[in-house]
Length: 476
Image (cartoon, rainbow, N blue to C red):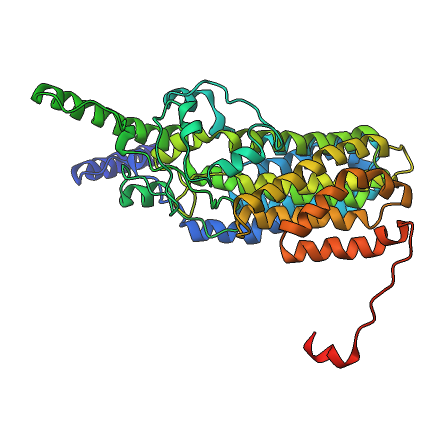
């Protein structure tokens, strides 16, 4: 007891000395500094990746005996990595998802596939930037709580994407709370947002995101001032104006920092795009093993994504409001997700074409796929052609993306049976003629190749193949 008492006395004395030196004792020591960001990233790429990979490998090794009980936990672990909002962690999660499909997908039964695709559907929802359409954000900017839902071919489809490229926006502005303004044909810059604000609120990610937009838009006046505002009043009004300006600036800061983060939105968009690629590879690799309800699950996840992207891209009023508070695309224009929407349509069209070929032994969904292919495919064709006409043949990022989707669709026609070709050409042949007139050279060549190979044999007359003049080989 004497030794314990001596120890306690020495501890008390040490604590007293610490207090005299200004210390607060052991409990008041500041926490150790967090590890630098580079160390965290290194840990993700090494230790975390190896650990996650090992989990998947062990699951695959003992899948026959443990999959019923552990598959939900493995999926939940991968899902948590993908949906955390950290790009590097999300990439690790997606890599492990693809590894799980590669080593275990062939052994999944119907119940397993239901679990897997439910997880995939949840991931699509979690990685969509829903904050862009949040009612609280919209109300803070004076917009209705809900945005009108418009599809690719509706009022907000091809027409809305081309509206921003015209020389005036009087019609659009008349339907919004923003006064009519004149469109500039140069890059849009908000006169009311300083370069310092732009730099602070719109960091440029060094990633391959699809958020650049070539559309031009009206230049809003500082703080949303009206072009028809009355002349300045006496000094009392000037004070009120200064107060309102300060309030508006505070509101802008609140929207940027509290309701919307550019970095979070960009990360979600990139991850959602990666999920599109992953879902298509899963669909393509295991289509013959899936039941009809599983196929519908994948399509439903993709269509839900398309619906969100179409709604946002057609809401020009919301994009202008976001622009005014400094939320812009990398090129300084309106923030859009047009490329991502078009790419989502492209994956959807490829899935429908796989279904249309009818290779799944479990069910035949070719008729339903045929209807969807014609409706969606024709809208894609029309949108591409209208874009080329509106832009007078100029290449834009949207037209380049649309050209890839159209080319993929035409390439898919090549695998159709003769009856399928005859059934689809009344819809698509007129659009192909429009492409020959207005489309890019690469797409026109794709059309010509398809017509020579698949349409020429169906003609009621023989077509003579032109012999190449050997003397002209050098010049051709």
